[in-house]
Image (cartoon, rainbow, N blue to C red; front, top):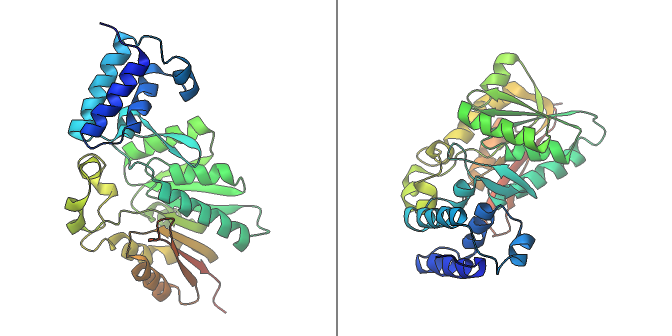
Length: 290
């Protein structure tokens, strides 16, 4: 039996809603299996769906609805800052909130280093490479590096950089250790580290806690372990005039700001709230000590 595309789309949307999932995911999965753009899909709604596309869609619908597999892992990609990034189970799925961190970094670099022809920036815990690749493509004065402790994550990030045409130097290692060992100094450190407290993991949706890499989510007992570790390593890699930019979990902004103020008493530290009114990003602009 064969079905028309509009019939399958209607049924799939209803199926997802019945299982408490977003109906719009049906369209994303259908576009993936038909290998079509949205415009092509709507031009072909009355055509019949191929058996291969239909069976693939059914399998993914059940994985998403019943096993809570993120749609991004099923289609292998996620949009970030207007570009499509490859993702798999080795990396955290890029979030819209992180686009605000990128925007904040770009604005501060422009203001803080107005006459600098090259600005050295490192993205720590790069994962899919979304932050590093986006920064490199949005501002060509940046000499971009990215670090991750996972070789498998770096392979994803490297492929994203290659596909999108971004120049990024990738380092395998723990936090800032590769730069420390190479005696490399940078102007800007940006990071979206794991920051979810251990006790809160159980409260996350199954889509996140059962599928996304735990190493990219959990930040110790109170979620602040990685920020504390950064405080020991940042002074070893930052130039005298520099910027630190962190994404943080809701309610962690002031605690992370205090860590930065204690480490860099001369810094102007700023907690910035996101579009949902949650403290999301913390920035430190560090001036040389007189």
